Image: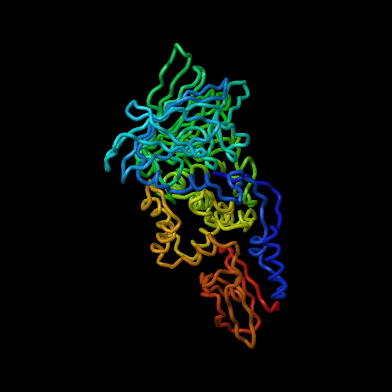
Length: 578
């Protein structure tokens, strides 16, 4: 997913107060550039993160692994949908295969109004369904044997919520291209896949055996969905075509998509780490020439990110870029694109360094999600920083791969201007609540800071490649990621994660010199914060190991100037002000 940006830089109220208190307390005269960046923020507006403080009954049903969900394991969806652009409506079925894990309860699925769940059947028999908001509890009559697989068929129809400003407000975008031809796409990460089709709408359980999508559209249009195109059926009597797309790998539900328009296709084969990868591109007919030029960033992205993250996780399902009438989204093996065939984020460099104009932001960022969001998926949306922090860092890694380490570091440091430090990166568990939109820029800067602590670039690369191998095609928790990175770095990173994920303050290295003795400690930090830091003291670089208590640092003169390695997302202050 992407954040919606603006060029307005402002101080958040929280950080202004925090700044003032530090100034009054310490009479400090100067802050480093890092401190100023930590205190500045970009006004970010994203409907993905606009949630009320009140936690509702529906939030609990959506966000919790209820007993009506826990007893069964999702195996496969066969989603069949007729799309009618004239009425902006959908009608279809979802045949869901599941395996019984424990004693049978009612079976919970979601479908949001104004979509209608018409009926549910098992083995041709209509089942009783109890509705609670947009959650539905299906009462199964057939005895369910633990270990065996069963199917239910859900019939649904209606006019789904129309996306006004996708991808930030989810739904279906019903647009027209410049020739007046229907141009339609789904985008539903924040609001949920159940906005347009019935499913187990919770992140922890993905269909182990993938999804078959059978999408029927008017004869003159083409549908592009996830996975590989199996066949196209002509329905001459209805003047429609049905496109059958097969996904063989597990897939998160919001990643399942439909894209409909006057598409033309071109493609290439990329020789990747796991062999030949089919890379296919679907664009509007009039944009073919522009796409053939701009999409050269796709194999470049694959080259860079396979280097850093390991093999592309979905060789069996191929890789696609699909033009859509909104900015873009990370739909698995069907990455959507709407960056208007220009570099940067709609032509703008998010880092304000110049490096952000060296690549197409949407191609790199949304493709980066194939590793973090699609291969490794958070079990709970409270841990969405796993998706967005690593993927935002992939932008810097792309820059580093092609333009050098200093360029990549400049890029990630530049994105600090977009950090608000308004609320923790981790949201509230069990109630469908994401954390702060800082999960993008602050998340990537946290990872860049941890990289400095690891202090071994090859080991760092092994760690982030290892994450994708260890948690291949899995849903995970923050704790699993933290524990893996601590174990394989050989360093206890727990306090660093606590500081940057669960607190809004940016640590300040406080120091003073008195009677030719220098003392340092971490201020503006959590209890027990103990991150080592690379500093320059009178031009001599050394590692410091401060804690939240004062400790001595050996110096050879009374007049001391301290600067910190800019790649650490921290600030520094002489509390004596001299």
